[in-house]
Length: 303
Image (cartoon, rainbow, N blue to C red; front, side, top):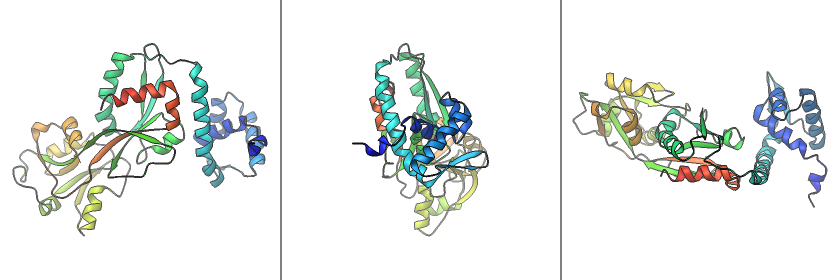
């Protein structure tokens, strides 16, 4: 039984996991409290055992080979699950814990989700710390799978296939609105699709994505909107919309929380847009760890 595992020193899997996440021998060695030379020796043994280079130096980073990319999800999930089960002997007490939970999020998802979570944690577990790292990809699921974050806060439009090895908890579903400043020529009128297309638009693209649901629909109708300003962050958008005749299309909750709604005219979009659904993603195996399970319960209670 487990014939393939008998041929391998399982401690080498820790080295594999660390190097895949850090892409640096020095950082991976530091995580495992090893010297760089000892880590390099372990990597050489692992390469020999698996008959693959696994990691190739490119510039200052060690980039994974196709075989390493294929192996990583199974190795990482197995280590994660085992670590969670072994950690059960260390009982988690939220009232006394100072554990840090790391979330991947954009400025918008942080703004609509974290105030309520932090306020709740300050009441029930004041020693708990939360850290937000900027989400550099569509939903930061790669960071989650790689173990760099505990949770990823991401959005979905419509129904999407879940990423293998992950589960999600739905926080809320929202509809989109079109906002312009009070005093805008179209502020008091009815917004038609032709009127929408005549406007200049502010577009927020935190991941520099090209397949936005609004533009996908318009493309299907063989038309397009005029993007005047494209932003990586939503934080400057209220000031731009408030001082120009540009429009912005965002989830209603975002407009209500981040904009001065007394200075806005808000319209229903004149065409169908799939609803915005905000979710928290996590590894299902983390549900075996008491701390992770507790945090999921706190998040779920905010719905």
